[in-house]
Length: 467
Image (tube, rainbow, N blue to C red; front, side, top):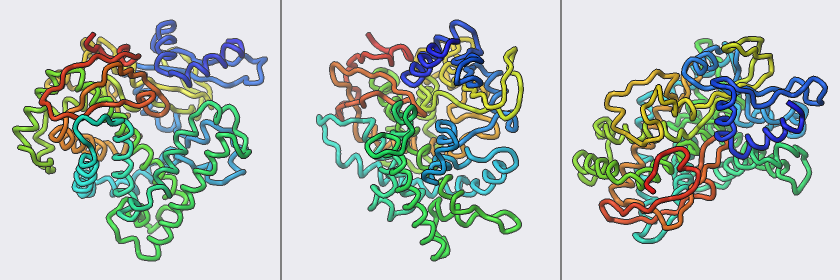
C-alpha cells in the first residue's frame, strides 16, 4: 500500500472506523488489512489488521501473552513524548498498562471493588442521582439526551469511585478527565503531538495533569485517614496481596482513570442508543412499559426487582448487540504469531470489530432488526456476543454497568417517555465508544407511547428503522 493510500485509510478510520472496516471486510473477508506501509517508506513496519467473527475474536482476546493491551497514550503517541509531562505515560492505563502475570495480579487486587456485594451498595446512589436528573426535566421541553446521560453517568461514576465529596467538585476530576478523553482522540491531537500553547495536544496534557493532581490529592487524604470508605478509590488503596503488597499511587491513578472513563462514557452511549431505539420501536416500548408497571408499580427498582425485569434485560442486550457502545477491541502483538493465514508481527495493531461480529447473519437472524424477544432463547457464544469483551480481559465492571443501565432506564421510563423531534438526524461518531454525532435532542412526554417520528442518518445503516 503506497504511503498516500495508507494515510488516506488512517484518516478514513479516524472519521468512521465502522465504515472503513466494513469496506475492508467486503474486499478481503474476515481478516483484512487497514494499512501496510511499504519497506521504502518512513513508516515501514507500521501495520494494522482488522478481523471479526467468533473464532478470530477468540484467538485475539484469549492469547493473553501473545496480544497485549497498552495504555491509550502509549498506543497513540511515541514514547519520547512521555518525558515531557510524566502523567501522559500512564493516561488511561489501569489494567491496560499491565500484561501477563502482572495483569493477573492487578485484576485480582481490583476484584473486591467489583464484588457483587459492593456493586449492590451502589444501587441507592444510582437511583438517587437518576431521580435528581429527572426532577430537572419538564414535559415538552427538549433535552439533549446524550449530554444528559453523560452528565448522569459521570455523577454516578464520581460518587461510586471517589465518594460524595467529588460531586461538589466535579470540575476538578470529572470534567477534566472528560475533556482529556475528547481531546486525545481528535485528529489534530494525534497528528500534531506538540506541547505548545494553543494546540490540542497542549490542552490535552494540561487536562491530564489536572486529573493526575486531583486524584493524587484524594489518595493522600485517604491514606492519612486510613481509607476506610466504601468508595472504589478507598478499596483500591486498601487492596493487598497475601504478602501485604498493594498498589502504588501511580497504579491507583491509572486504574481510577480507566474505571471512571469506561464507567460513564460507555454507559452513556448505551443509554442514548437504547432510548433512540425504543422511540423508533413502539411495540417494544409498550411491552417494556407493561413489564415495568407490573413489577415496579411506579416505584424505583430494588435489587430484587432488577432480577425480575427480564424484558428490560433483553432490551439492553439487544441494544448493545445492534449498536455496541464499544464497537471494537484493539490489541498489540507482543510476539510473532498467526491468525488464520495472516502472519502478525510484533508491534502490529490488531483490531477486532465487535460491531461486525454482532451483525453476522449466521449468528443472529436478521441482524439489523432490533428484536429483544430473540434473547428469550438466544444464548450466543461469548466470542460471538461480547459488548464487554470476553476472556481474561473481560470488562471488570460489566455487572456494575448492567445494573446502572437497568436502574436508569427503569426510573426514567416510569417518569417520562422520550419522543423524537421532527428532522432529527442520528449519525454515529466512533472513537473508543460509539456516540451520536452532535448529540440527540428528544422531548420528555407522559404519553404512554409517543408517536413514531422517523430519523435520518447513518444509524439507518446499523439498524432497520421506520421509514
